[in-house]
Length: 286
Image 1 (cartoon, rainbow, N blue to C red):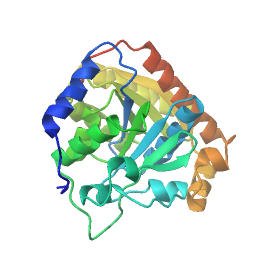
Image 2: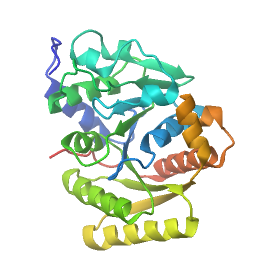
Image 3: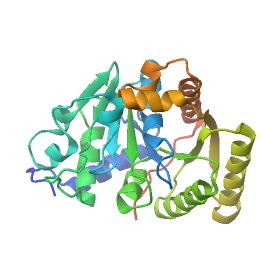
Image 4: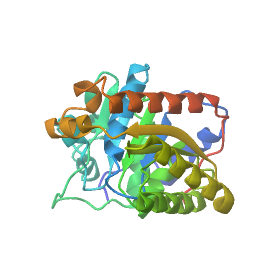
């Protein structure tokens, strides 16, 4: 429900952007990664920050977006102090380009609000407007990472609809696996052509975690006819909690910790999978 005066039709503009995705790989368009989880507390945001930093080290120009509406936490995790937030765009206080906050070299963030009473509820058309502005930004991002809310709300499905790749974060707990399966089931039916990548986080027993990942893959293949690429696991590491308390990104505070190294390896594997993928049609939110 932004009050900006637009000089173009949002829907037509978005359709034009999405139609470009259907063409042969267009380097002018950013690659969109949507980070999701069925269950909260699985470390999704920590991974999103680490992935952004890893992609930046590879020479990419990354926009990390706080897509957990009015429960944003990226600024807390990174110690950022942005002048503007997503809500300021929707209220017409600033532009999309000016709301972008540079966190580190090649890493830019669009921070959300957290428990704001002045929060403007975001509609589906608002998200389309924000997304089209990010894609067409003068910053010319190579990648956009959406760090979404836990669960399967409409906003999560819409952010998933923008993605070239969906990154599912889970762990080996039965409830987490069940929620992850539910996420794949609903997103794959609502978002046509969804591409899923699985990362197991906070792992204590690697073998147990990999067995859980295989069960999820087989269930999705058998019942949903949906492929899930297993990227790997990230071990439980007390360095993560310490970096969160310090409000310093894990890869900056503990760059050679086991979790930081595994996050970097997972992000590099995602880049490798991206390079191997054939161009495919856009996703459609229904």
